[in-house]
Length: 287
Image (tube, rainbow, N blue to C red):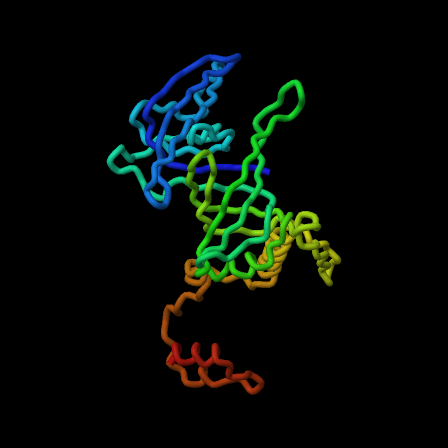
C-alpha cells in the first residue's frame, strides 16, 4: 500500500544536515487545501553528496515549490513528507495556488460507507513503507477519514456496494486536524472487493485466423497492423504500372515530319488496318 501526496507549497524555513552519503534538506512549508485552510508541511529532500548533478531542485526560503512524495508521519498537525520530486515554480507567496494539496493512496476499508447529511463517509486504513530497522520493515500506518457529496453520481453505486475489507484506491484533497488526516474525495475505485484477490480482467487469448498469431500481447496488436500495412504497400509497389515521367514522354514522342504530305491516297487506311483512337489522332495531324 502507499500514501502519496502532490502539493504546491511555500517554503518558510530550511535546515540542512549530513547523514551518511546524503544531504538532508528539511523544508518547513505551508500549502492550501480546498477550503483555503493552511496545511503545515515538513518536506525532507535527500540529495546525494557524490552526485554530479543534483537529482532534485534544492529550494530556498520563500520559494514556491511543487513536491511529490510519500507521507511518513503526522505530528503536531504537521504532515511529514519524504519527497521524490521537487521543482521550482513561477508562483510567489502572494499567488500561492488554492486546491493544491492532493493525496493518492491505497488502503483497506474499515467500515461500510454511510450516507450522512448528503455526504458519503468511510474510514480507510493505509500503510506507507518508511524504511528498515533491526526488527524488519518499518511502515507508517494511519486512518484516513474520507467523505464525498452524494451529487457525484458516478461514485454512488461504488459507495453503496463497497464492503468492509475492500481494498480501495482514492484521490482527493487533504486536510490535517488534530493529527488526523481527512480527504475530500474526488474519485475512488476498487483494487479488490472484500474476500477477493486483486481485481484484474482475465486475459482474452485472441487468435488471428490467417496465421494463428496470438494477439493477446499489446505489442503484437500494435505490430500486426503495421506489418500488414507494410505488406500492402509492397504489393502495390509491385503491381502498380510504372508511370513515365513528363520528360520521358516528351523525349519518346515522335518528331513531326519534315514535309507535309498532300497526297490524299496516303491518308487512306489499308484494307486490314483498324482505325484506333491513336491512329485517328495521327491522321488528323497529317491532314
